Length: 126
Image (cartoon, rainbow, N blue to C red; front, side, top):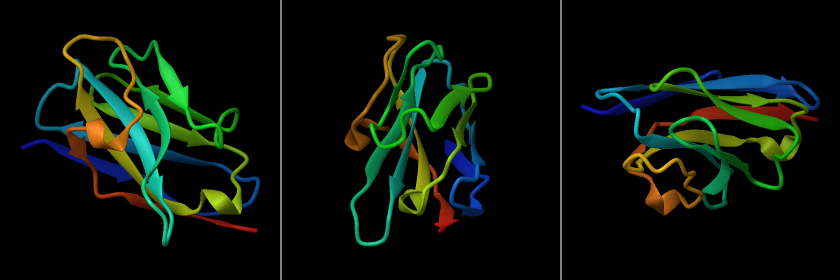
């Protein structure tokens, strides 16, 4: 059974940092692109960052470029380092995985992902 579990969310002050972690289990995610999305209250799910299966390609939403960094820790773990947090970063953050059959590409659209975690809450106070 494939499972993605996020951790590391919590409360931070504006300008602070948090590091989210996503642990994948149930199979080896060596041919899977990974992504982070977020959903704020009353809003739709929004792309945050994505990374290819090798970790060699990354993409970011304009709103987080220069502040967030996505990385992989082996095949089955992905991280999101969030620096200089802003109140508008407040949301539930979701980890996702997409089988890319060896293509070293990122996936930007949420509908393209095969598996999702349950989410972790990030709250940034001003």
